[in-house]
Length: 220
Image 1: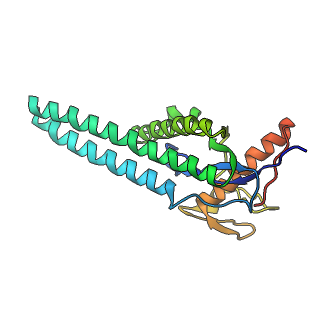
Image 2: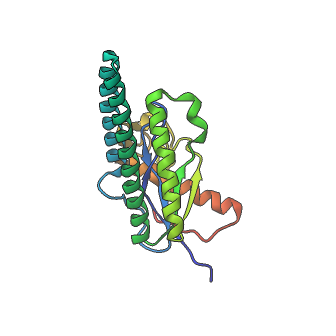
């Protein structure tokens, strides 16, 4: 009998255009009660910490550039290296947390939104987030492979606007207001990250069914 799988979310999605905040991704699990949120708000931790650290680095660099001295230039190089090392270490721990969460819930697949086609439409600040997202995904892929977990992607269209409530699916930009998602049709209220995670999971499952892969069940 083919093994069936079920869906639970993890967090991802850094480097979207300005109107689209980072959101949840999804992971496919073999058994269990269905969707759940990962950890202590990893999405917000990643976005806030990385942006805060980057702004701090940019302020220091701008202040030193105004001095124009050799010692200032050497200091810029030093803090740049420090920031790069911090970023790598932070993403290492974030990716480890994602994979550990997937393993603890028996997940077989981690699903990210495919953000490859937005690079030309994002600001310089968001380009840093895009790099962080790509590096996070790379590290997750590496760690997930060691645990026998697959990493897949789905198209990101309307995951933040669609109501994930079973039987609804109403899609409108007014459904979301920051971290709060309230469907304008059925009045379902969810955290916007959790709603997006359900939509990403739904997309992944629908894609598998259309391709004839099957073997996936979910409880949303």
